[in-house]
Length: 95
Image (tube, rainbow, N blue to C red):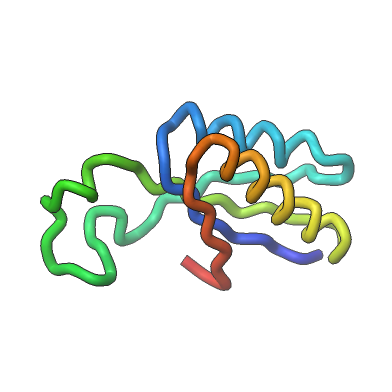
């Protein structure tokens, strides 16, 4: 079973919209929000108090899909809903 991992950057309301949309895809049973172990630090800065750090929150999701076709549907839905809501959506191999 393919696992799709993504980071959503935006508001709680926007993240919930993406989670609900992905969970509504037929065949998707496992959608889990996981804690980002480094949620207070940015990769490009040693400071966690920069202005742009406080404007959006990072939400990490793991979605287990039954096959590659459904995994692609998850990616497409997350990009579509996230993009319409002005969120950044990043797909990663691991958190």
